[in-house]
Image (cartoon, rainbow, N blue to C red; front, side, top):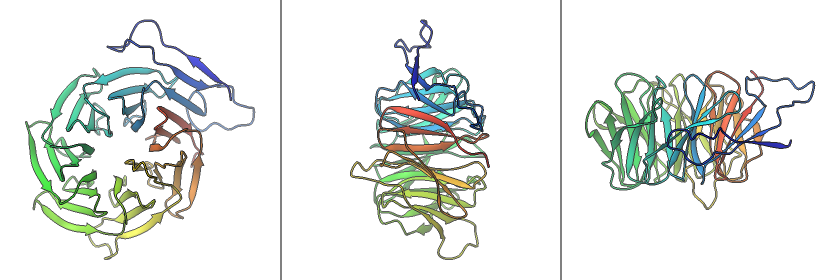
Length: 343
């Protein structure tokens, strides 16, 4: 399809003084093609970042997608209409390695190699908290799904830190022997999962302040992790080019790795490629260095979608919370929103 280039109105948005270029495919869809989402076109191309886009997530309502880039900026994009970029948040002094929305959709949490984790007001775009106790790159962050406003972060300094947005400074520090490259909160917010360059997933009990479980199976660095919507399973992406699903329920079998997905790639760039679950827990996705978007069926472990389009490594693929739509971001400085078949 031909790309139509649209430009925003003359007045700058916030403190964004440069025009953000929005490109989108021609919305004229051939007759007979069944649409499955409310996107203006089956595929929407979002461009405007000046460097690789390393992370992207939909807000809980599915009305906004946030993106974090190596250009040090966070962009917010409308999901409806022409997918306008309506806000830019800046303050980080280095790339945005990972971002998450809090469950209420009011706050964004970001991690950066500038050794900080930051919280942002998603309505005003203002920074509301800077957490800067790490002594090296912060690779990953994750907010708790329920309970107090807790955040966990993982860093190259060999620690995972627990933060409470209501308190100054970190509230706990979990020390490891090697760099921590991925972190996640258990569904009940009583445990923290960490992964790093020693290829091992560790489960930390927040009450005991100690490791209560180690999950071994990956043969290379763990680059991303995500907890299933029901909290029963942990998905981990490794630089060994495998995506593993671990049963985290209390009385699971000794070998907790219950599924292994493959097909995607990691290459010499050693990017921290993320992974995610669909809202119903029936599909999983992962970034890939081969420039394709990969989506698997959880039950059969087969690849449902291998979607081309990006011209660089795909760093993250996120599912829309309500519609059959995925967002993907890439080293080619762009994001795609694309609809998939309705289930």
